[in-house]
Length: 194
Image (cartoon, rainbow, N blue to C red; front, side, top):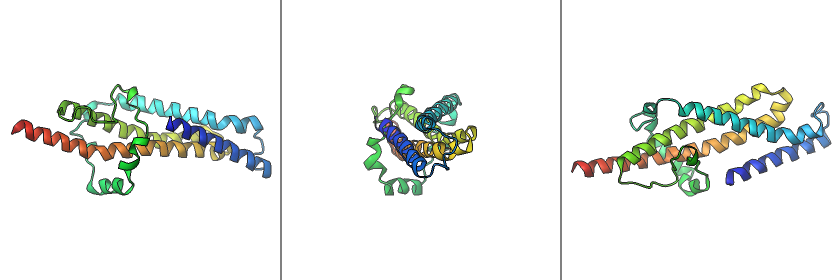
């Protein structure tokens, strides 16, 4: 629900600010009628969401070994961990929606911390999620290439920026969680081998 509210508020802000600009500086929106100004932000939003979905669909078809616990995607540096700590990811991560329903694997909590098979799957899904979210950032801006320049500047860029923020936040959360998952995995290995 949080993302839906953010998207709705962003669309309302884009529409309201565009209408105000049109009221006081009508030459800026020369050629855009009132309905265009009202309908383009939601249409641009739907287009970006659709393109994000297509990108996610394609990435999910890539080989699982590229995203496994042994892949380089699992390497989270100490500096990266410190950055997430400074940004307070731990405090706000619960407010960002988790969309595991699309893959059948929820990542909002570690349901089986004692199972290394579960942890491997969690890390696999987290790595897929990171790549999907980070690829959706530039994909959101690619939609601008399909728009007339006026539309891209006034409607496309704000929508692409909101899309970028809404994709960067979950990627950060997933990256923040990976070292903790790896620590659980190593602990389980030590217990099993003891």
